[in-house]
Length: 378
Image 1 (cartoon, rainbow, N blue to C red):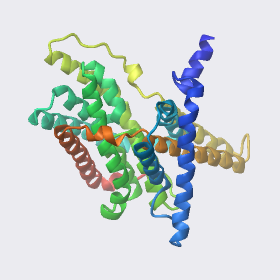
Image 2 (cartoon, rainbow, N blue to C red):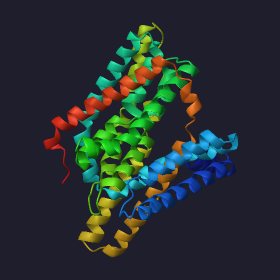
Image 3 (cartoon, rainbow, N blue to C red):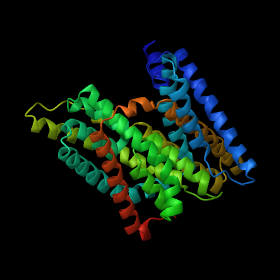
Image 4 (cartoon, rainbow, N blue to C red):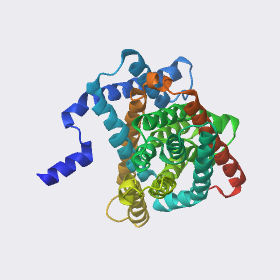
């Protein structure tokens, strides 16, 4: 019985499975509607490819529904399920698109840029927050949310620095607001204004956008807008690997924040589990990349176990469903964003969030431009 309970919690979280259904159905309907509108725009304007991604449409429809019709409380478990479990499952399955060697190479290319962006972004954000007389804990939360992993980093850091609930809520609201703005803007900015290639654009989006869901959404938009068939790795592949590298820094930065805060307050350091902080779905992503590498070697190259056609068909099937799961998560992003809560933010947190987003974006862009000759994956 205990084993069944653990499996249930792993698959569906602590919520009752039945409670997930209403919100999940709404997100699924929005996803289907977004795909239909995406194709309709292309047909109406006689274009081969719609200039508006179905991912963007899904988020916008979700935002409109949430902030006009509203979402009853019964929808919350299903929406949260899409934002967490579906997102992680989609990212895990995306790993089948890349060999483990490509993952490692992208990770090595990105790790230095990620490290510098986290250091500069966090330190400068805290500096600005203090200059604006923002509470130190709120400034720290906005800094780690911008620098590392969005709301997940904020929620994980909050208790370790004794942050108040309203400070956590303010930080989450700030990160959500600017994360949504750059998620919509960067797929167009990187290509049309900055002229970055897909590797550079992926690293930039992976380091400069806050939430994992927002990075996945921006990457999907970029691929649908600018990537032609046969390009590997795509902008989304690079963006997600870069973001996963960023996520792993949670296991270092959050305990460090707790340590320095406790020293400043002359308090006992909070006990933090690094294992619990490590985003375990990253291992699933790596596992799928390893599976892809083994399959390509034994089935395609060595002609063992199965036919290359069957293997490619299997990989295509996994990639197809990975896209659907990520699209569901994006619908959840829209449905989970209450604009009225964002309006409650004061001017100072807004300014700090703006400075934080701009700082990380500028630092990332400078590093990508400087290191451009080295940013390529064979």
